[in-house]
Image 1: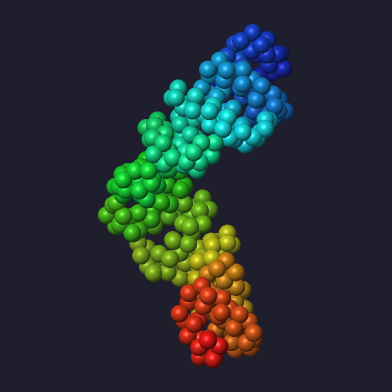
Image 2: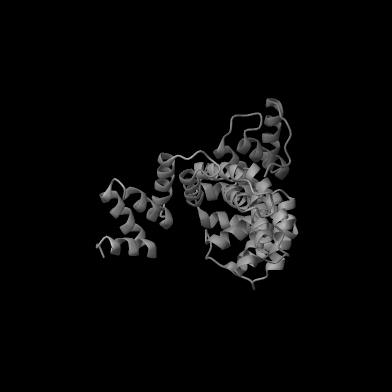
Length: 320
């Protein structure tokens, strides 16, 4: 959180130090921020901790919040998640929205405190009311999945919408999923496409895959396999196994891309190595033409992972 800071020259920083040494809380916080973010000086985490501590001990909520983050990350101080949580609570109780959101995350993940989804819901709620987009997204997820609160898809949609309007990419994606599937809101594929496109522009891999699927099927947008292939490619390059599998199929069939069995096998293998069962099965079939050892290896792996097709293929080979 970068607040209460402007540009300072060397003499002004020295003046701040004089004031801070005499107990001026505002000067202490400013010095903490200056050294924390390297404003007009070389960044010095230990010096930032020193001044944040002074202000935090005097009850400043911003210093408590920022010092909490530094304890959580072991930045300029030995990592101490319990101390981070203690400081975060002090700040949150004074109404610091960022601290309220951070405390919600601590309770959600059990970091520095015992995991408690109801407490996470309470603090996310406080931060969400204060307009924090990340907290709104986290709270929406809790309502969507019924974690720490009774499941309420309509409330999830409302909160995702608020968060999305604040530019939260995860919320934009999750809201798109809700519109695509008609969960908590009337199904609207065009709106889902619009939201996915925003998330895709920001490099959100799941949105790339989902939007590719919509282009491939012509849902909410004119069917376009070339566009689908390009989106699958973007997601594949980020390691998405489902996208790798779908793009492999397109290369094998020459659908939306030029037919290329070598590239198809490469992508099937990339997905299969991540545990994609259908990719494992397809590799088993493709290798059966010229590499029986590899064929059997992939079929056995697919069968082990529950593929009925692979089990039947192994039975046909007399291997089961």
